[in-house]
Length: 65
Figure 1 (tube, rainbow, N blue to C red):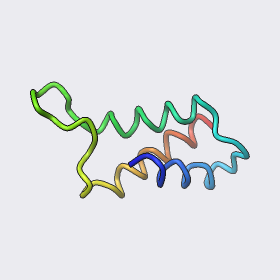
Figure 2: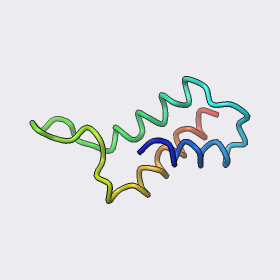
Figure 3: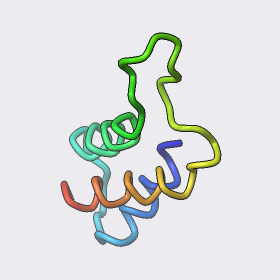
């Protein structure tokens, strides 16, 4: 779920390296799409939301970059 958005964010931002902070921001953006307050809820968004998750991760990564 994380890597397509991470790659897109790296390309768009023109970053020459991926830092720990960039990984953290992208990870938090993906996990932030899920409501984990309900018992039994998945920790990741559904596969059907792959494009939205990738875009969200890319924006978060590019913002940090």
